[in-house]
Length: 235
Image 1 (tube, rainbow, N blue to C red):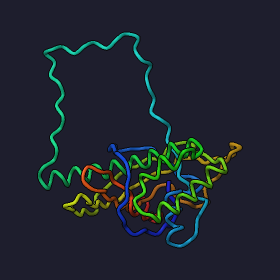
Image 2: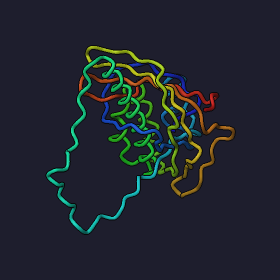
Image 3: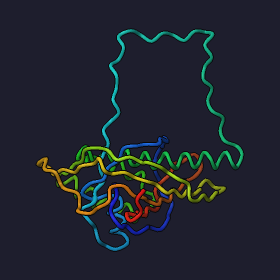
Image 4: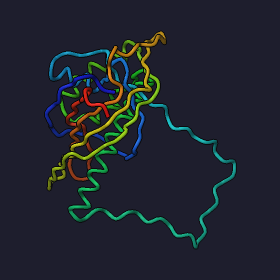
């Protein structure tokens, strides 16, 4: 999840990892929406521990079949890879889709980290953060939760991701601005002793965020360079 009333950070290119778009994705809210909490630290120097990011359960898996998969028939048509975008409109559409998928992947990864007691958070989450202020602030937040042994359960969802801006760049450093509606209502936070940490009184569970996503060059990844929560804007 993210923290409450977190001011926005300025943009700055950095490095990150891969993506996969979905409409609804798991993520969490909880004691303190961590990401936003950290951003609040950057702007105001105040961290609100009542808002933490939660986690999502992993997808179910079916039992493997005992029989070997049948070989495809010679007459069965093979799937062809999608052609790479070439026109400006195709490139724009691909960039927007990739930026959305990257943000959703960030929520999913953060959820998995929080459900697992914030273990190995650094190796899993640092690649998503594209601004040095975000990295330095969130490092302290996640280290604190990992040391305390807090964890989360449940799942939040990205209800919608709407495009609010796009800036092309010949060198591959395009910018995509998104308005996200996030629902954190199903997430619960727990202490190391498995005691429920109640949500801050009056804290909203479903509201909007503005994100600035930055591409890190040709054939590279997208990072989160700015995050602005709007807890006063229900969605």
